[in-house]
Image (tube, rainbow, N blue to C red; front, side, top):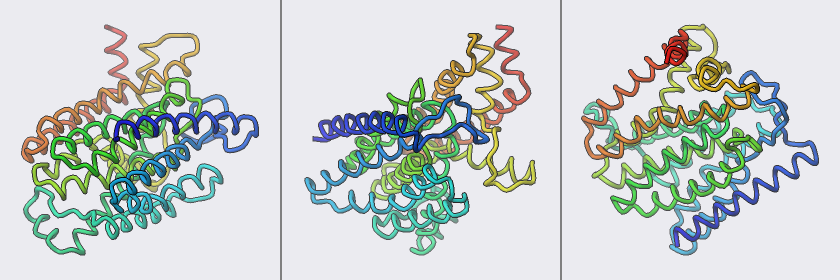
Length: 358
């Protein structure tokens, strides 16, 4: 049944995206007019792909709730609704400040903690595990983690297929481990969300016919965080560092952005800029590889696969060592070091120079 409903979810999401593309272009409404700091596209594009993912997931989760008499599928959707709708409102009206959206992400996070009991009870670090024995602290740990990951997917949403492709890779890893430990709930959610994202992905990559928007990015990040916490909580076979390593690319991109903006630039960490790794790679490295006349259009979709490969350097070891906290911590440290070296090479134009010499 999971495969069948997953396929239908993919079809529905794809169809809804097509409808949104046609309707938005004909009406001239709900379009991203490429006037933002981080925007690189040349023509107005519908920015409500998250709506298609939200609707298709809602229907799929409702079917599973009824079929398996598991209210948690409904609870997950209800918890995700505040931040998803806030993101969609921002996509449409552009009137919701980052601070307000951050507060709403915490509302969704605490909703998941309350409805799904998605608390962090194990961290793999002795003194934190001792603190996590207290329910209030375990709930606070979880809320911070969920809100953080929710916003992290939005941080990496800057190029065609980047966030959606990355999310499918992360969901595949989480779903595979859920299958191994027989966690049907997490496996089902990962499969259904992945199917809905794939329906969007075929319209977004490589040509960018529709964008994910804040609504879609927040929904994906929220679900990734919640099912990760629930997987670790239910199965002691899975190390608490498994989801950390799986999600380390968007997590560290967010933490590094906060450091770069607040410490290095003395600006608000909520201030948007174009200094993310994917943005710099798009502008400074990919043009050295692809030298077509219309380099901006070719560089956009060409950048995402390089970031997917980078992401795989955390996902693969996470899957291989999912039950070994020590190895996962070591791999996390190695990935962070790899990211920083890679970032410095891109910033200093050294990576493009190496490519040119090659």
